[in-house]
Image (cartoon, rainbow, N blue to C red):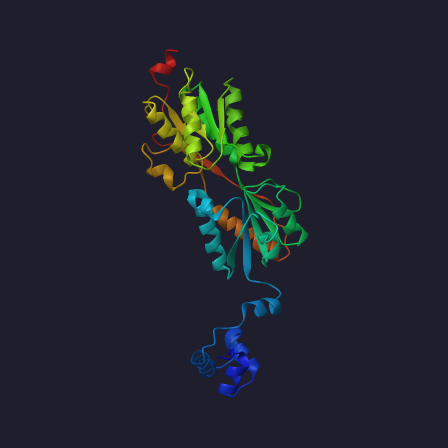
Length: 341
């Protein structure tokens, strides 16, 4: 079958091609009756709408914002916080008439999404700042906003107060009387370049250094999930085990709780555990998890507002969203075992 075009519809209705085009892109230019007649003809002929590539070329924009992520998409959706952020960004973009295009980091040079996919702007989400994908976007002069990422001059950013939130978590344990404190944090190939991990470590140390506590630290990758469990268990299986633990995320904290239980330790009677994020997992865990809340929907909204401003030629100021401590049932003063040492 021959391809149905705007001219095909124009010939069927007996109007100009421009009039048919207006029926789809500028409906206010036509009477309701004429537009209905054109749309009915289009439906009868099987017209699927203007060609997206041609429309993008004519407008000079695609109507889509990219999201550059490290790792695989399956890993992003397995993580409760990343999934919530993706959902928030998608909803906020949709409300602005924009689509979300996911740009996974490239694994070869045959197809590099950051280089080869047409988008109007990109949110860079927790990526290595030295990533060649970011370099490609900068070479293309694509509007950028970095999220949970190192702040760089000239690039808009949206972060949460990781350091302040981590300080609250450690201070909570200190105020309860804990002086044997462990840390389960994120290990990456380049620890110094991971913004949340670095800032949270600084925050924990702020509170612990102030009272002369030297924490026991283990670092573990995010995947597979068993890594955090194994790291926490090894730390808790020592004679000088901590009485309180602060963790990089709620996922790490829950792995720590499971590790404690496997050793016959009770939470919080024998071990206090604090997470970070206040994800959907935190309140539903047993016991409910003390954690640091970050407002993920607000982060998604702020990221979309920032990229919209940059795409419009603006230069928004860096955004740092507040964090807060949520005290639940996974923390308590040290038990008799700790105080007797």
